[in-house]
View 1 (cartoon, rainbow, N blue to C red):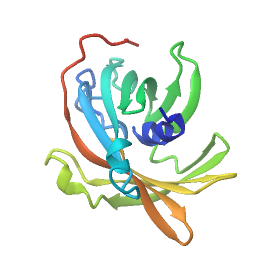
View 2 (cartoon, rainbow, N blue to C red):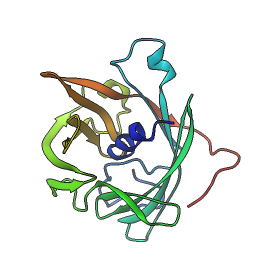
View 3 (tube, rainbow, N blue to C red):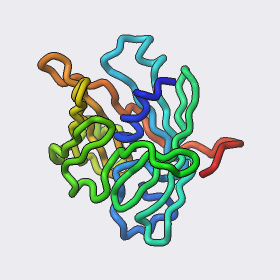
Length: 202
């Protein structure tokens, strides 16, 4: 499985779990147990586009009583294989952590989206502003299509812009190719699936 492709999704994929008090705002990442998201790269031709489809399922989410700190297990699946990632939520931030809890990468900073600039993994991130997703027809009425655009400028690499929606995380990412921003990752389906018969737990 292409981990370099997964990380932006995790980040940038990343919610009110049953443990979260209703009065807290939704974080910008998926935490509802059973929520399953599927992504495709629209820039690819068929059948390659379907063959590289990525599915992300929230296997488990456990939050503290205040609803602001928790650990989420996400299971990734594609034709290339499977992978489990653990994401720690705290005060609006999302950090990719190892199975031992050690931080590996900061996907969103604490205070997001009020925190508008940050640096991580040899890249600079900046909040560009609010935006309405043009794929909102895919969403149920209970989910808002208005999210936050974030631009990533790596020290050496391709700039990327990602739209995050509350309760879902990444729904679309664009890369700068020449003078045009081209969509390279897009949410194409969402729903809830039953827990697998066996799975690792955080």
